[in-house]
Length: 220
Image 1 (tube, helix red, strand yellow):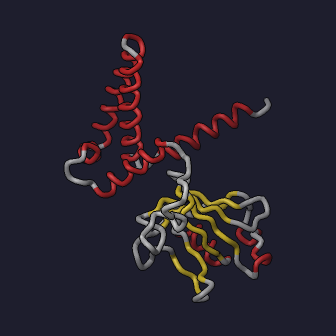
Image 2: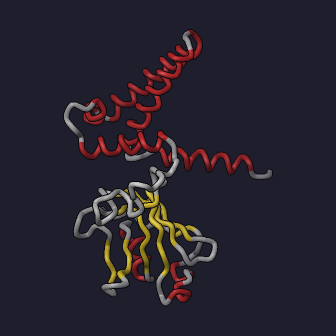
Image 3: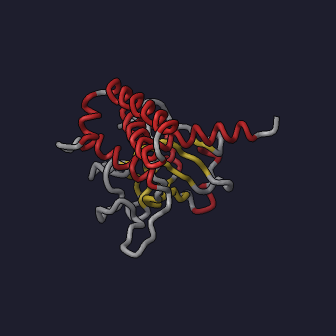
C-alpha cells in the first residue's frame, strides 16, 4: 500500500541534507514499530532509497551484499508502512516508525532482535493490547468479540464507548474501587477498538497528548 501523499522527513529540510558522505553514500535506518515502540530491524539507505521510502510510504533500503535497492516485504508481503520518518541530530541516521504487515525478521520473528533471552521492551500493556486489537482487525478470527465489534461498524463501536463511559462515570460516584477499575478497563478496550476502526492506534493518542503537553509547558 502506498502513502496517500509523500511523507516528510523530520529533522532536515531536504533529503540531500542527510550526511550520506560519512559512510560511503549510505546511512543506517532504525525501524521501530510505531504502536509498540519495539525496534524491528536496522537497514541501510542510499539517497534513492530514502526518496522512495518518502514517496511510496513503504520502507525501502539498499542491500550492501546485492548492491541494489530493495523494498522490505516485496517478496514475502511483510512490508513496513512508514508512519513517520525522522533524522538524528547529526543527520546521519534515520528513524522509521512503521506499521509492519507480518513479522519483520526473515526467521519469522516479529523483530530481528527477538531472542529467547532478550528482555522485552517495557512500553506498557496498553501498547500490547493495542497490538492485539490491530491483529484482530486484520485477521477477523471467528468467535472473537473484537471481530464482532469490527464487523458491526464504527457507529456501533462508538455507541459501546459511550455506554462504557457512562458506566465508568456511574461507578466512580457510586461503586467500589474494583467496579471502577473494571469499568475503566472496559472503556479503554472499547476505545482502542474504536480508534482502530478509524485506522488509528494508541500511538496517535500519545503523540497528541505529548504535543499538548509540550505546547502548554512552553514559556509564554
